[in-house]
Image (tube, rainbow, N blue to C red; front, side, top):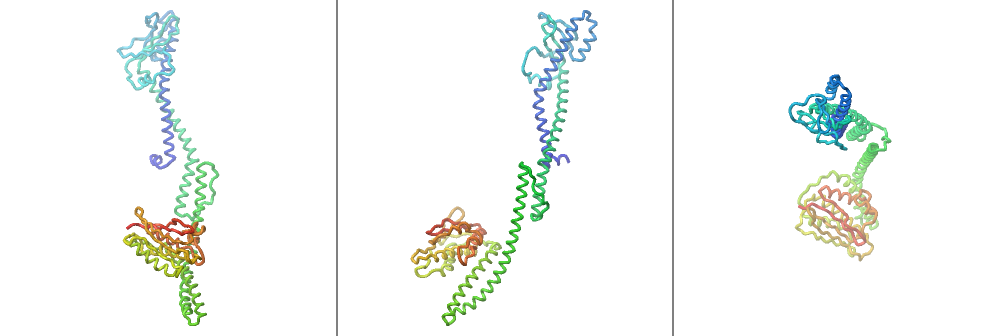
Length: 469
């Protein structure tokens, strides 16, 4: 259970990390403190030995001081004490140690920092043998005091000190970790948990409002995150509502256009009969009516095609692109211009060039581009203006760019800003602004794209990217 809490919860990991970091810091601090403890422990015994030396020197009857000396040896762990006078050692109390392994420690040497090496050997080294400690004597006439202390006593004292420091460090780490854990729990963990729950609920049902509470007024990063999440939910819900309304509106428009196209088709039959009437005045009126109805049929067809284009899946096959482009040009340009206003078409695509594309989708793409170019060039007022439409192919990597170039007047600024946006790029009367939008969707459906290369008063160039076969 504890392992699961630590491995899954951020708060558990934070608590464990805090304890580990505090213990690591305590370990770093313990190394110099253990060295200082060894030095202080030896100095304390030397000071007590100095006091005892003064007491023994002032007592004429040595036998009367045996109780004092025994108590001193028991309290300080010193097994022998002697005084150095004029280069000679004067035995004072205790018994000489048995065996060898005596290590010299001179406390008279002054150091700013004790040696870490000596403390390390005292803690982890062998406990056999004794320490010969030399210290300054407070008794006049004595050069130094010499103490014999078993190494085992010093090692036991240092390990006991380490145990006490470890327990204290663990208590400090637990208290510090708990305090940090509680602070982080209420400041970070709980708000993040609420955000995570809110994200999960929002993902399951974005439109359902589970809480109308505004975001907190915190000025830190958590408060900023809460406000951003709140704004995101509001924006996404508003977008969903707008899309739902547009979808409903689109369905209604598609139904209306479908029925309207059927009505216009019936009216087209009547207008054709009027156009073929023997009386000239009626025939003229019939011709005008036929053209008006044809424009209405085209508009309704384009709206229906746009609403259905997202449902078609590309049926990719190997296509000889030169033939397909020529077919689209023949079907499109025949009804535009005559005489001096005639539009000339030049196909520079190699006849052997093949692409992987949907034949019907690609035909509709070029049909829309050719029709737009032809309409733009047909509106040019000058009869002697050059009206050319040229198509050429440029291979690039695993794609082929088909460039459609016309010599029209170029695109207006408004049309360039909303070129591929539905209903926003309409260029004139009878235009819905859906042609390029539908063409771009069809191109992307088969792994390609349409881009505006350039436009000016000398003409416009579109690039249709298709996949190489």
